[in-house]
Amino acid sequence: MKEFLTTTSAARIAGVGVSSIKRWADEGKLRTVRTPGGHRRLVHSDLLAFLKDPEGHSALPEDTKMSAEWADAILGLEFHALQAKLLASRGRTGSWHLALDEVATGITETGIRWANQSISIADEHVATERLSRVLSSIYESIPYSPNAPFCLLANAEGDLHTLGLSMLQVSMREMGWQCIWLGSLTPISEVCQMLETHNIDMVALSASRTSTDTESLQRQLDQVIGSCKKANTNLIFGGAGAWPEATTYGHRLTNFSALPDLVEVIS
Image 1 (cartoon, rainbow, N blue to C red):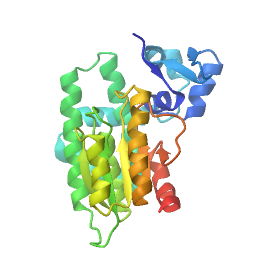
Image 2 (image 1 turned 30 degrees about the horizontal axis):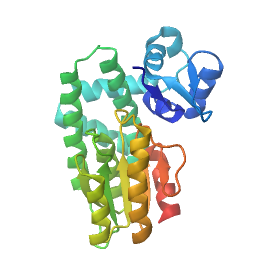
Image 3 (image 1 turned 90 degrees about the horizontal axis):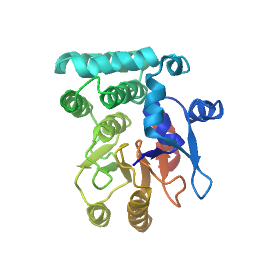
Image 4 (image 1 turned 120 degrees about the vertical axis):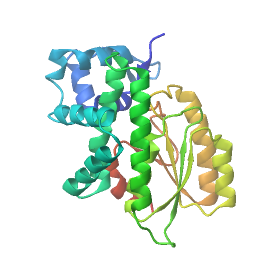
């Protein structure tokens, strides 16, 4: 069965903007189909083939070299060397949200390498687990005020990929927030219950590209939205999962660079 992507999900996988995906589709470089509602969808395997093709790579942005460099670092560096590279990126860019957008391109490239079988699933798992530990160590090293607001971090149900949340909590901590980590394997009902029993200022939900069921994500969002409205709590959701394109509440986060402005607007 073919896996179809929204233009937003395709952009996240490719490490480019949505406008680039739409342009490549308009130029006939990427095949698209239309849903009954008229929305454009791309075939996942077609996108991966395009990204591997030399002519396709010529259309990619100038940060292709950077994404390959970060993928090499994620896959090849041991814990302390990888930690040092992340800290150097933070020093060069001036903030974690900018540095983490660079890291995200390397994660995308790592996924592409796994998809085209240039690395094994074991290689990918070892590398992402090491990166998770590095991010956790950085998060714990950032000071915060005991009066800081709370952000609840959780994955969509059934989604085991927590790197997005690991990066988000680093950026949130730098902005002065405390984070409550629910991670993966926590039912959405438990997320809603936390809103009833704890003083939560914001909920952040993440869904990776493995979360392809838009209807399921819509149901989960609806549950959380109801609880957030009752508790007067803000909601953000992100990742390359098949989130619905329109919601009645909450804000979609497409990259870490947008996080400070988004938090400022909704806080």
